[in-house]
Length: 447
Ligand SMILES: Cc1ncc(COP(=O)(O)O)c(C=O)c1O
Image (cartoon, rainbow, N blue to C red; front, side, top):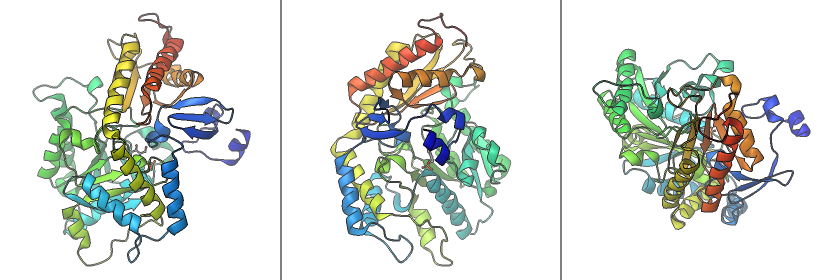
């Protein structure tokens, strides 16, 4: 760790927090092993990506074969590779019938950058150059390159790096646990209508797209009401605003379907993906676009001057193809749905009655526990109490490694996690909660 601290700058760098970090040396299935030889359950599948588990020979083999055959070839106009073509063809079969064309990147933020640029270029080519703004949501996470950061709806990610890119606007996200009472409309419709109000405020002729995660991930695993996205689709259609689904976490089975928006029968104009597409075995992301957007892109005129050296990396595409095949062969969509329900039940059985557990929620194999100071008022703990961070530390001491956002503990274990390890996750979290907040309802010591 001393060598690490002397040599590295980390993502979300925080030197003092990192002192208690781990140097990981091996992964096996749902387990991670650190340099001391201590084993941990990988409660977040790496960073929501290693869905097929660590140490897989099949993914390593396909990467090695492709590296030996053609490790890299440019994907720039005038160049292509067989794995890239096959991956795009396969994705066309998995995405809605209107999405058939794909652009690949190295990860999620680049996918979102590509979505912003494809949306702006689409409207420009259609003679509506004033449609440039991007509306996103508070608590949404879209990556941390400058424009993706500007779409991300959590100010902690902005403060050192402002000014943000102009033209990025945030509206409230649905947060059923913290829903304000609405009169007339359901909560889902009322929150969706925030989009309409923002479009009218900004002027529909200035708005290019709305971007949203089907289930908010990093922001605390927040599942929208069922009527939210259908209404969002209607509003986007009414005002000619493209709907871009950030499926970077939810894509490829995490919620029990290939894509999160399938839960509500909603078809986006652009879909962004990354993470599970290679199960983390190679950096790859991308976007799919509707036939209408693809048609406009194909139209002549100036070239579409957007690109990355590693767009459509043949090795990444080969690993992705095998990942998708494994998800199908091992029936992992159904498994993610079943295991997610199993984990939620296990967490609820052990923690639902605890005086400081506000909500246990999830969809498929992504879930969260929200800790609160007062269950009745839903009042949060004072940030100085560092309740989430302390539960995270106690969980690690018991062999579970995941992440917290404030006092929300998030979980997204690999799709291949055995049921007994899901039980163990729940046991560890119950024990860690008791260590920090007291063992039984009402007996919690204040920090
Ligand atoms: C929904 C979502 N979008 C985008 C990103 C950014 O992806 P990357 O870190 O690969 O740039 C993430 C990363 O967690 C994410 O959760």
